[in-house]
Length: 420
Image 1 (cartoon, rainbow, N blue to C red):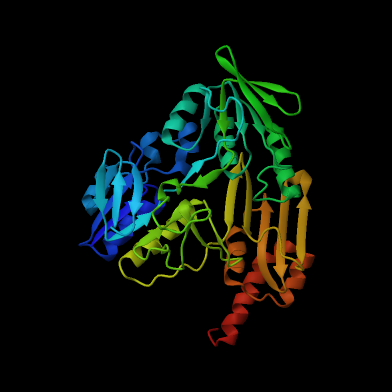
Image 2 (image 1 turned 90 degrees about the horizontal axis):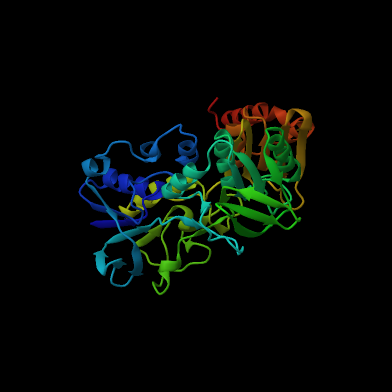
């Protein structure tokens, strides 16, 4: 059986290793277009603060890891897929046939339509090459403008702050991480960053970027102009599906997949940022561009490519972020549901916030800021959809009793099942 994987990120690598464990005699080939060993984008901030070198970003540390497993790694660009012939067209007029194919091509950064966005000195922080370019320019005392204060932007923010730059952050939304935190939590995070010496603009747009000698000038819609030695764009990503035009594979925001991560072509699967799969909380199909989802997808897709029956139960929307020592997190339907109840605890002076969202007596979503002891329990309650019964009322009065609620609810299940 000839298994081919397009994409050398976490989803692709985990799928390749899963296939080799499940079917040792299978032929497995990973095709990645970057001229690097397979690496993790999530490691780039650690590279920027010199906590790791380039090799520290690699997904597997042994130079012979893939060779020892019998996995071929090609550094080529796949230009198109012929799903009927089960063949890939590779740059340079090459072809690669397959029996089973996994598309794990990830996503790419979206550049906003701003004059000057293509100037030298403007970078995304998405590839190892981007990391090299930013590290060369973002030296201690230099002026850096970061466009975007979403999840990716805030990860980059911390690394830049540790480099000792003069950092300005521009966010179009009315708060930081607007797709992860509500207005209360997002603005508490903003104040935290400002107290650390970071210049944060929310409800603000970049209108243009211009050359200013050897540097850049960033013009804002509020009339300000910021000097910058380097500008970093972190304004969102989109799935890499452009090369699938004419392939016959159904796409929307990503590749539409079923609960086995199969595409509309039965021998072609998708995983990671490119897969539009089931959302655990809503039952709808969406793209979740986070590494835990990519890893889970890779394992499930690899098993199913070998003929196993591994079901994807749906991805739990989960984000955990460390911003200069302040931990924030959100889970599930953190914004709540129509007709649902909610409970909040807020201590703005101590940067503490906890918000719980209920549907009847089931916890369906949560946010926390500055509180780390509840991280695992919140996800567990949401993912198991436990009926809290009287404990919902206790949590409405005091959201911090979440651990007690979890233990009491799970013990009640055990008693009812005759386990305890």
